[in-house]
Length: 75
Image (tube, rainbow, N blue to C red):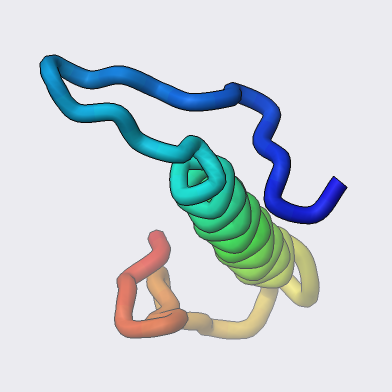
């Protein structure tokens, strides 16, 4: 199975390419997409936790109306 491709040979214009390179490119693009999705999920969880902490707690104490998390202001 080594060296075989899912797509076979690909012809673009007059040039013919082995799609082993395309398989690698698709795998790399998929890995980058998954890493981006994990980062966005982490960021969403952090912001949600910060908002929850700001809205809970003792309401009688004077607190700031905003927080700075990861360089972003959350109101």
